[in-house]
Length: 548
Image (cartoon, rainbow, N blue to C red):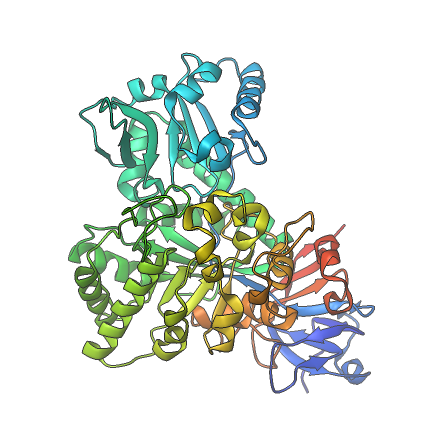
């Protein structure tokens, strides 16, 4: 006779994300797996003296959230000046000044979450903008999307950046077109600064933010947040081989309570020897709790500083369309080679030309190698041409998207994203419903720390396309239903990462990852989703978070 269950949640609205049985009232767990999904009092036969029995009181029980793009290793750094919500340069200056009062002996000023909209006139920031607030302290300010870095004059001197400097290991130096002098603005930071060489160069230059202990502090704090938000599987999308030691430390110290999939960064210049090392790391780390394997690539950058690749010029420009990091033919051959070697690719693409370049490359790979279940991902899918919508399903490409990014208080009218592409292209912005109706797999995620980690924020935005304070929706025709959004955060993301055979739905036999929420979201006005919280997070049948 089977022994009793370890955990039972009953009297709940169980949203299973299993089409064979979409709804139930109780779930039982034993030995890390789901052993029962049922209704009424059937669960009582599985209860024993040692079983933890939780009365769901009509609240929503869902599969554990699978955050398919979450930079837990990058995270947010409490040692930095926090610039989220600073809407103009004087406010940035006030926050830096307050931080300096608390840290008068700091060698560097480091800040994060700078919003491009804080600089007037839609231009990019310069060292001269920062100098009045920082004095002789070198300062490194990261944008909210961590794709650009803003330096003051002291930092330019400390890092040896002059008119003769164009490329750094951690970014591309923007120059004043009139003088040829560096402006203090670095693009490509996400591509270069977060790479193995970029981090090593920042450490060698004495930038504290890149110190391994600072990195581990960010990782540990982010992992704690993930468990508290019901994220039972985290996909960390961009890591070098050097970074794997941070995850190993987290496992050894008991800080990795969620499952984690780590993708390895494949910047331009990655060698055949690197790929051999990547494959060896994937073989070494191939467990249910920690897995290494997918490869992260970039085809373009981001819209706000006009570095994403568009089919037509940016609004207000006659010819500038942004650039791809590879010529289309070269990228197609690269992806084909990686596909033939059995790698799964996560490709960052935000502009419509960048996305098309990736889809063309996947099509080429299938033509050369033959179709296979590769589940290559286009990550972000911010500005998608309608002609390319059906190609996701046709090519088996996953749309890995971050609903919060399309919120009007981040990207909508009056914000840098919307103004950069122009109103004529707003219909292309994050077309979640169009992709879903065309049969594409949607894998939803937070992109923490670019946006809030909480999946409930993403769910709210996906179903409303409104700001957190409410207001008018932006491109409301691309909202999705709550059921669709939940699937994107569970089974869709599990499928995107080859985990759907064991995770993503509340199905007997699957691993017991589940989340009990404080409310039944289906019974709430959408705005009230933001007031809900996670009551219980369970990974492998073990409670890893319990609301106080």
